[in-house]
Structure formats: structure tokens, C-alpha cells
Image 1 (cartoon, helix red, strand yellow):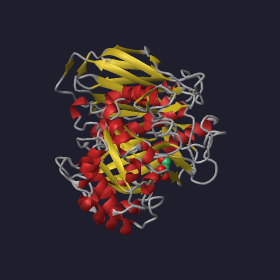
Image 2: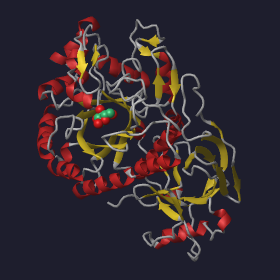
Image 3: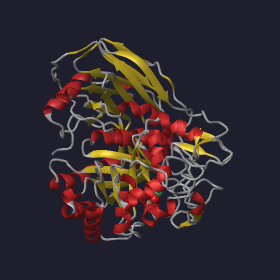
Image 4: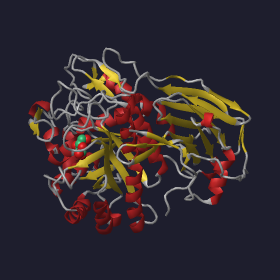
Length: 559
Ligand code: AHR
């Protein structure tokens, strides 16, 4: 059972912040319980939201690559040099910054040389991790890197450490990035690509504690060091090497790697899934009740605690935050849809998934600059995907796609600190969740974007937003994503059940923005303002009467 709770202001916040927050929130009468207040402090902004937080992940798994992204030039499905044209166009719209490939677990059994050269000469392989499906290797290094060029995104190569060799990975790097008269560069040229690609991100193994080799962290750390030596920077290409990091609550893995690898890695990965557990049913993607929905929100938001604890460990070894934390797998994991191939992880995607996307992105924004990249799993037809396709040529954009499309304005924008006071609720498994989540950012043109997620399944919330120092903010655009039911989703027959619409229930009065955000909805507001004052002050007043939870975004994780 979920219990609404209204919590007093706790003493954990610095007095100035409490004073600032109280200034915008008068003691509320009972009728105002479904309200929240936000105060944004543009002048305190210092961190940019790295666009790479909006990264994606494409694994050889089910119909993510074959059938989803790639159908081959001879397919009856409209394609552009073998890539599905409808999927390609939909992905271009998202302004994807980085794409991780070829796995996942698949990466540690992938031998890249099988995926180059004439397609009819490429050997077949069995995808042992994912349903034993036979793949013909028609999608390989060239096909992936060319796709990244078409999408305008950085490639993130996940190297085989579990079943490969140092030589194999070293040669792959040479093949992709060397422009000299080197054996691998010449092989690439013979295969039709003259100029080297730029490849920045290199994952040295994936889940090396599990499907990537079942290693102990001490052993993996030594192995990483060995691999990293031979993965070289060729001809102006500079690799950003990512060590295979922990799964959610495995803090010891992070500790050992920070201690034994240290600055030899540029990034350390972290995987966190919103999942009920790894054995038994994970629950249906579209058949759930309100209790399940709130449980999902609680589990999703627990990523914040997990990130904070990994960050604390990293901070002890790396005070200047030179090593990035890359959440290179995240998202929901439900039961596979009935009637689909076991092991292909094909799941539907409802309004609930949209909330997992918006809330998780809001959390990531709070942990920049340590969190430098995130890659939702996965891009097409697998887990919490952006797009679902059929082999009959149909396509549906998921609610999660729409969140990424609405949120793309935050990419590379200045993250604006704020305080938020809202109701909270106790949910299953001893978790407490806020009823509202937000991100505020200012882009390079000075436009402010405010995204708000009303988690409350039943109640509209009136949100008062003050932007310190900003005079007469003007709402220049508004978008809302919601639907009649949390279980609503898009199908090939009804692809627009959950789709963004124009949002108008916001107004400005006396410099305060009032937003009426309907139950279970996610909105994005675009704001412009005449002037930013250089000074603003913190007012103070009595705390008596406040019965709300406070989420403070003013201060980042301590150094
Ligand atoms: O994304 C599906 C799988 O989840 C990946 O292959 C693996 O890395 C993780 O366990």
C-alpha cells in the first residue's frame, strides 16, 4: 500500500537554503496540498549537462540490430544502404550524441574480424547470450561506424576482454583509427574505407564480473591495465578508455578499480536497471497496477543513492573528478512480450517507462560533472527502447522516445540549480518517493528549459516557479506527455496513444510562473526573459507550518 506523507523540513540543509526555500513557500492551507514550489538560481549555475548523458546502446540482441536498425540493402523494407529508413529518420530527430556497440554481454564473445570484408564471405556466428540466434555478421565495424556518421554521433566501442585477446582488441583500434601505412589500416582500405574513423570511447570489457568473464575485481583491474597499454592513440585519435564497472550495489568493485587502475582509466562504467529481480517474473510491461507503478518509481529513483555512493568512493581516490562515471546501461527490464522469442528481451513501453526515463535523466543532471555519459538500454526493440519495429515494416515510437525528444534541449545546456518543495509518498520496499521531479537548464541562446514530471497518478499539482533574478519570464513554448492510463502504450495499430501535445496550463503573474501539471504527466516549458538581475537575496521566515519534503539541487556532491 502506498501512503502519502507530508514531511517537515529537515535540518540537513544549510540555513541559507532553508531560508531561501521558505521565502517562496508560505505555510500552506490544506487545500494546497497538491502543490509544489521551485526556486531556480541561474547565477549559481556552473556545470553543463554533457550531451553524452543522452547516449544510447545497440547490442546484437534480438531484433535490435538485425531487423531493427539493419535490414540489408536487398530488403523489401525501405532502407538507406541497408539501414531502415524510418528508424534512421526517427533517430536523427533525437540528436543522439553517442551510441554504444556491439554489447553488452555480446561484446565479450564478438570477434570483429568476422564482421569485415565482403558480406558473403563473413562467417555466421551463434549469439550464445541471447537466444542462440544465428547471425550472419552482415552488420560489422563498417556498418556501425557508418551509422554513427549518418546519425552524427560518437561511436562507443565495447571491446572483447572476456573471450578475446589483447592483440585482437589492439588490432581493432588500429583498424578503425590508424591513418598510416599500417597493416590494419591497409586492411580497412582494402575493405573500402580509406580514411580512418574517429573513435573516442573504448570500453575495455563489459560486465567483467559476470557475462564478461566472471572475474574478481583485482584480476580484472590487472587485465584492464594490460589491455589499456596496447590500445593506442593513432594519428590524432585520442581514446577515452572506459573500465568495466559495477552493477548497481557492488561498491567493492568500484573501490578495487579506483585503487588499482586509478588514472589509467578515463571512465568507469555503472549498470543499473529498474528491475524487480534477476530470477522469476519481472512483471508485465503493460499490465500493472498503481502500486506497481509507485514501486517502479521508487526503484528507479534509487539510482540516485547508488550513484552517490559510487561517487563518494571515486571522490576518495580522485578528488578532482578526472575519471568519469558512465552509466552505460540503464532502464526498465520487464518480462518479454508473450509470443516473442525467449532471450530477445522484446518488451512494450508504457507511460510508466516514460517516467523512468524523465526521472532518471533528472538524477543524472544532478551528478554532473562526475556522471559524464549514460546509455539507455536499448535503442530499438530491446528493453526500454526508443522504437519498436516489426518485420512487416511497421514502426512505433515509444513514450520513452518522446521523453528523449522533449529533453534533448537539455543537452550541453547549463544546469540551473534549484530547490524544490513537494509532497512525498511511502511506497513498497521501504522507499519514499517525491511527487515531483524537475530539471532546469539554460541553453547557449539564453533560453531556459524547465522539465517537470508529476509523478502523482491521481492529482494535478500546481507548481509555483520563481527564477531568482529573472524579470518577467515569458513562456514561449510548452509540451506535455501524458495519457488516460499509466499502462497506455503505442502499438503498430495505434502508434499515437501516448504522444506529446501542446501544453498551455502555465502562466506568469508577478514574476512567478504557475504551472498546473495534470496527474501522471511530463511537461517541458521553454522560457525567455528580459533581464537577469545580478543580485538576489535569500529571504527568511519561520518554518512553522511547512509539511513538505524538500529536494535541494543547489549544491552538488561534495568534493
Ligand atoms: O542490456 C542487456 C544486457 O544487460 C547486457 O547485454 C548486459 O551487459 C546486461 O546484463
